[in-house]
Length: 224
Image 1: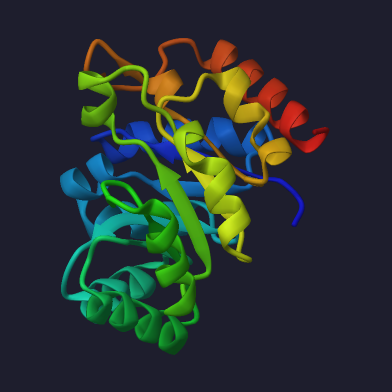
Image 2: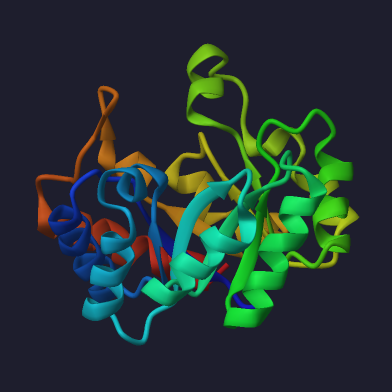
């Protein structure tokens, strides 16, 4: 598939998130992600507000669903999400419930293999259960304790093990993220390197710099 750039809105204020999304869309970003901190802070209202402001853009709700799969997908789909995230370490019944709801409500499912002890098998299990995309994710806290950890630890093997598109996120520099299509991960995420500062989730204070950074990033991804 052709490379896609996704902006991760890992913020805790919907107005700041919309402002950052507007800049990202102007810069050429394809997908908008309502990050987990934003969903925890603003809930369904965040997705509804993003859908109202961006009626034609794909919106990923990073639910990190672990249980109650059908209801969570139903709620987010009705709010305007086009993609939802289920954790690969959830019970397979939850994964199947998420996929069923996604089919019923015409949304796509992204399976996150973070924290799985066997990421290859986890990715294959997600694909077998109908998930549409795999997320190779090295967690924020995990990297805090071990800065050497990154998606590169298993990315190549995961890409080889599944036939659905792969996304890699967590601990990647902007340079590394821009190269992800070359590593078999065409769903490219940018966000955290620009908005997390000293453990605080907040937007960049320089809109022009952010816009230019995103525009250059999109060009590099699309030209890989």
